[in-house]
Length: 254
Image (cartoon, rainbow, N blue to C red; front, side):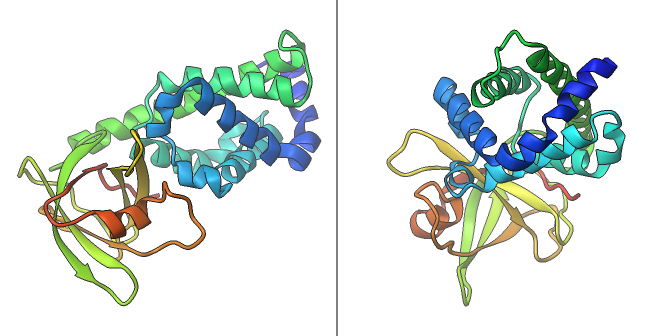
């Protein structure tokens, strides 16, 4: 990035502090309207509650504030890359995200798309996308190389459901019968399910509360209040039974 690009990006910091969530909310609506297939990738419940737009707004602001030295955000970048890998985000998704983000900045800030400001943000986005794509490629390779590991989604069957004081404990075993990578306490997996009455699938991450071996996973699913019809936890509790199948990503830990 040129010094001029850096200065232009940093000039938007006050606007991002004031209107960042409005911008990211607009962005997600724009992108999902233009690419409805991504409704199978992004958690729609987190969209409806505002959780995802708030998280993205905070990340965009932090990146703009440190645009001249993004290496200071290494911990945050690692966290984002882990979340993306857990959701099977791929390199080709970045061009879709970038196009819609740049148009959103132009439309929300009422700045011509051909302006120097949008060009500066384009260069900033390409820089960040390159960092994340590289980090995520390494993580996919590391996951696949582990004993019992895999990259992306893998079919699992619900083999047991145990009632808890609040919620249920689900036991998940791989459909292929092969070993799975172990999961440490605090690590998480994404579980993707079919949403009743909708032709889409939805993912949600679940943390392990105990060490997991290489034969099965146990997740504790608790009911969520004030959430949408897309909430994975509530769908699992109400609609999924022993013998049903879900998709699972390999364990990750920050």
